Every structure is written in C-alpha cells, then in structure tokens.
Length: 145
Image (cartoon, rainbow, N blue to C red):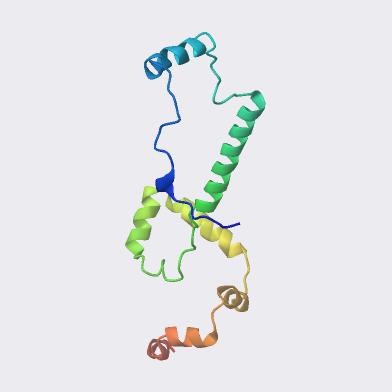
C-alpha cells in the first residue's frame, strides 16, 4: 500500500450545508414563541432569618474587633511633663475647679496624718542617690548650714 499525500486542492469545492429558505428571518419569531409564557423570575438572593441574623452577628464581631484593634493606646505622662508647669498655672487651675483654701488645707491635714518614712519615699520614686545628688545644688545647702 502506497500512502498518498493529502492535498486540500483535490477536494471538491461545493457547499455541503443547506440553509432553509427565510431561516434567519423567521428565527427570532420562533425563539420568542417558544420562550413566551414560560418566564419565571428566580430570586438572586434568598433571605432567611438564619442568614439575616448570621450577617448581623458577623458585622457586630467585625465592629468589635476593629474597635479594639484600632483603638488608640493611651501613653503615660512623661516624667518631665509636670516639671514644666509653672506654679501660677497650677493656682489658676485650682481656682477654676472652685477649690477653696479650706479644701486644700484639709487635704494637707489628711496627708500629714499618714506617716511615710523618707526611705519609703525614695523607693517609691525609684530614683537613685546619684540622680538626687546631681539635681541638688550643693552650694545652696552649704549656705543654709
């Protein structure tokens, strides 16, 4: 058997497909006739109580997590923040708070009744002796003695 090479030029050039007369003219009317009367609306989303409450619970959980995640952190006051406040500003603040001298004197009397040793104060301040000596002006102490 000898194998012949396939050549497209040797194929007959006739159209083997036949289209009925007025097919494309009548096609839209045939499709419309077949689909009319059979239209049914299918809802895209169906809601139930379960899915509604699930959605609400998910939104609340996201809101709570977002609040605690994005809530700004409150930093503590620095050790130097009150050192910059002038005495007159403190007095003005106390006047604005409607504190009388009697209220302030009463607080001093309450604090006098509490006995705190000097060593406890230094421990609570968490300041080393070296820091204390650096902050004290030794010339002023020598003049008072």
